[in-house]
Image (cartoon, rainbow, N blue to C red):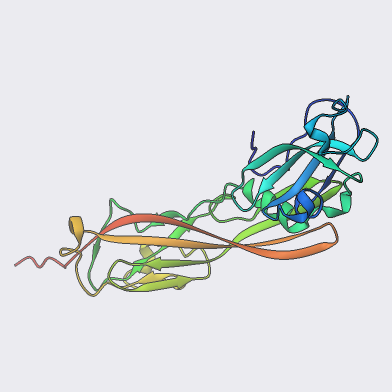
Length: 248
């Protein structure tokens, strides 16, 4: 069974275990889509003549249960393999563990506080945009993953939010935005805002489809290595924009 965000599981039975890269050790290096593999010695070993020995005799190498991650899918593959030498622990790829740590974080799109789908906005009046902040919607978010004696820790935080406003405009904000207060009056947001020049009357459903897309920047280190990953998440809201009503 695949467990997202974790290294491949250990098989049944007892005996020495290890970790490695199936692309380097199994099938003569042909399984290049299999990564972050863990191994469990099959104990007791298969009988002589078993296909698990792949034509070799007991005592010539050993038979292991191999559990590997399949490419970038997050799935795992479990199979029985013969190896001439015990798998080395130095084959664990820290970058793979970094991605597993990110998979544990449950990173989400922005938690949009404004604009609200129930709000009513007006042409020419500054709109203030901001998001609520939490570990899963803005960061920082920290997680670790381990395999073969290597531990990698990753820290994720939203570095920018791109707002597609539905009227053809895009606003990119490098922070969560500033909550509006009544004392601001008709002033524009100091950090993240937009002014509509046309109503949403002609848009589907009479509302603009607004999409807020977060760029998560993730720094990781461990196993003698370090690097950076990027994840993208999106949230959507429908916004009604009307004209000022003049009372005569």
